[in-house]
Amino acid sequence: MIDTLAGRLDEAAVSHTAVAQFGADAGLDVTTAYAVQEALVARRLDRGEALVGLKLGLTSRAKMTQMGVDEVIWGRLTDAMHVPNGGTVDLSGRIHPKVEPEVAFLVEGGEIAAIAPAIELIDSRYVDFRFTLPEVIADNTSASGFVVGPWRPVPDGVDNLGVLLEVDGRVAQVGSTAAILGDPRRALPEAARLAGELRDGWVLLAGAATAAVPLRPGAHVRVTVEQLGTASLRASA
Ligand code: OOG
Ligand code: MG
Image (cartoon, rainbow, N blue to C red; front, side, top):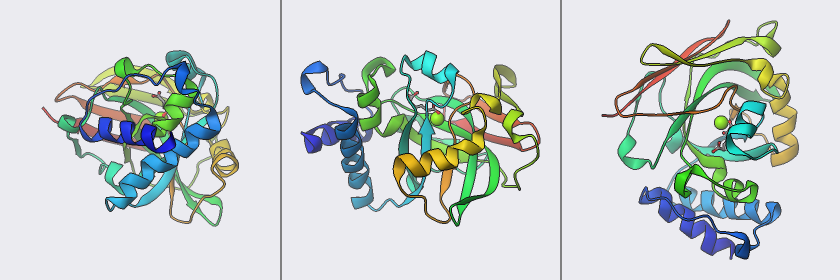
């Protein structure tokens, strides 16, 4: 079953065509769901992608409410998901992408070496972006892309910095890093506990500070985190 479900999700991503939720009959539990995720990401690695980090999801109340799911989850980031800061995201390869404001950590020696403002691009492989907790875990927590702004040392007050998500110069979401586990630095021990591994040089996305917003063709998206600066992307036409 693990391989069948991983194959379905992989095919959905590659063909950018949403799949139906697996449904209760599949009997997917959280443990099996992480095995599906591993098998799904293994297919990417077999195609030559490399693991470059991890992400946490549903670390904020806003996201739990938006997605109707209420447990912290984790997923895997590969080099193919990385979009350079200010770069263009090709929408032709996505299903129904959304963007959300995050902070990223650089991991060294099991610790936080640097912090950066970040944008996560999520693109659920399920129809209508609807899923259960095991289903979204199996789908690598909707991971599709990420942008990291300039790295800097962790500033004082990182547990409560203002976060702004702008689309075409208009404010789309406002929030605070406090929304991320009460303090985004908690993402590090949380990721180590959940994933069991954090390699040097990996990027860790701590989770969205606000709800996600749809990424429309041609849109310019900018995330600003107080004291950290900005990260931005443009969607292809
Ligand atoms: C699941 C991924 C959640 C976050 O930052 O909370 C996530 C989803 O919303 O599709 O990445
Ligand atoms: Mg996220």
